Length: 154
Image (tube, rainbow, N blue to C red; front, side, top):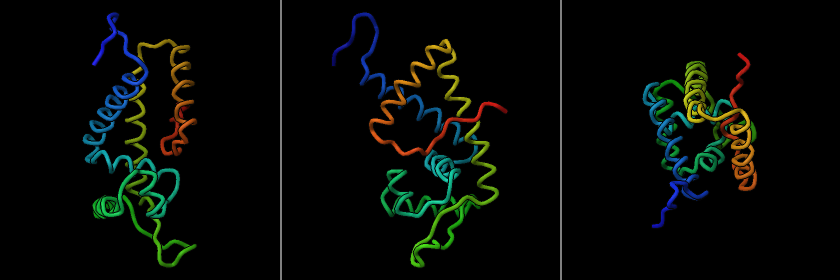
């Protein structure tokens, strides 16, 4: 493994290490809300709309059995519910309950605040540059829009 003598890291290492950093923030935030990281991700994904199990599994990158267990546990906690899919009588859609929507909003806002703190030493121009570059990585790799920019106006 090579290191840069000046202490800088390359794009690959920076992306991988920043992923670990953001995941750690996500895990810590989820734990404080009585959630697992996966439950926090599920709630954030469902904030936008209910999902069918197949599309939910693809979005979260989970196998059917893992997703079923995750939804089962989150449903037992009263945070999500399964409801019939209007387009397919054999399928169900997973939606937030009222309790789940409230918790999702709180968890989402707090997690966004914590992630935002990671760039607290950046100037507005540096934040904009980082957002533009990472936005290109996301767009070029067709990452689903599962975590939206927080509304910082309120």
